Length: 101
Image 1 (cartoon, rainbow, N blue to C red):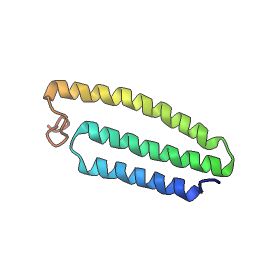
Image 2: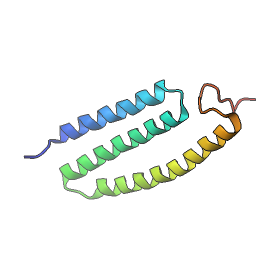
Image 3: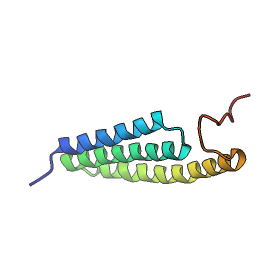
């Protein structure tokens, strides 16, 4: 008894949509950051589903590289968020105007 490909893709689309809604509606930088990570994991799930469906290792290799990039993003992103918090004492993106003149 196997799970069909469509079930994996529906779950992946649902997770990606949740991430998009989180990025679009939230104002906290940490929540936005977690929503972006959720979208990356949704893409990883679809890569793995297609790799299993096609009996290929290509999807698993892509997932490995996406995870490496996501780990680097977490390190750099959290450092930037902490630096902004130390300067402005807020992580609300509506109150941040660092790039404005």
